Length: 60
Image: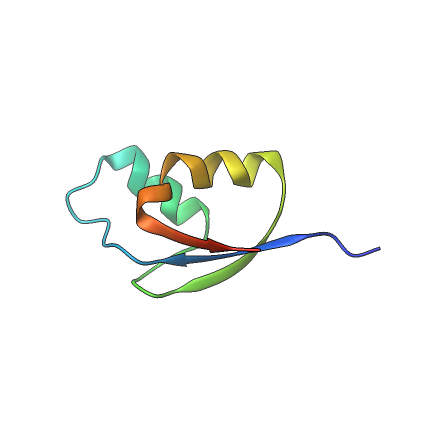
């Protein structure tokens, strides 16, 4: 059984954002603009995405 994943891409710069938002983006494993990661669909990851959703593009 495979676990569902989310494809997360950083589409806006973290320059000028709060320090905890920058840390959340780093925690998701995103380093620079247009960097994409496939992350497991867990409540923890969804919470992080919700916090900085204005910087991200998320696909199932």
